[in-house]
Image 1 (cartoon, rainbow, N blue to C red):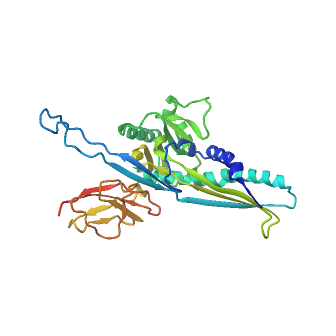
Image 2 (cartoon, rainbow, N blue to C red; image 1 turned 90 degrees about the horizontal axis):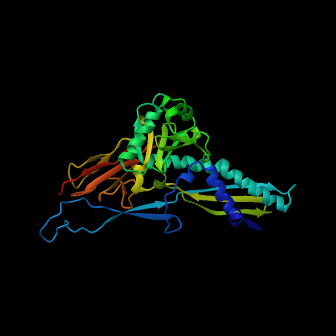
Image 3 (cartoon, helix red, strand yellow; image 1 turned 180 degrees about the vertical axis):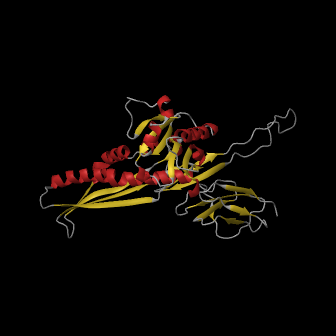
Length: 352
């Protein structure tokens, strides 16, 4: 007989995950899934301002259909876990209680750290990347954080809801810096899990070092730019299955982390400049045989309709020369071992 824990423990599991994950509670972008694992987000495209004409039939400018850009996101992280409670010295009730405790610990020690590390990788590879010549230290870490603030201000990112994820080893570098003394560090206040204070308008969340890649220094985000949806498909206890005198606990965690394409500028990661993948070179010697190159790239994605190849539903994987006469080609190099995503290259190709 199987005791399904999805209903019995679902509220507890969701609460535990939100508390133990240092990132999930700060990811507040809303996405609605149209299917079991896929969601599409539509972003309306605006039009540039023109001079009003006092005569004629197009005084407000030439009529244009309002277009939208479609971004598609698909859950990819489908993980599972299992454990056994032997029945030799456990009653049925104790088995259920022990299973609940074990689930809580499993989420804290395995699921949450895995998900947080994955989230940091996703944010670094799908937002704006700043290549630092050297790893920041006490002398310049606060200045580097203020560079992120300048980026946010120049891209009109809302002042509230800004979060900065830093490795734990950076905490003393920040707190021992001369600039920290004059900042709003929230000393003595009740703070959420992982939050250590504020700097340059960002709420600082301290993350264990091992969750960051070695060349990833910190990430600044706006809470509305990142979605962290997950589904717990099944969690159950099988009592006395074949070959086991006791209970087998099984669980499945189904989730993903998405940087919204329309808000990618609200995700800023400082990384080692040497770990940045080179942007693709777009060569159009002939407009009907456009080629893309980026040394060592895992994959090069491109679009010919002006949309961002990191997110667009129309993007294609580059394999061979293609016809782009009269179109704007955008390309990005991604999924390279040991390298972060390149900047997006763009080129308008002449008509045939």
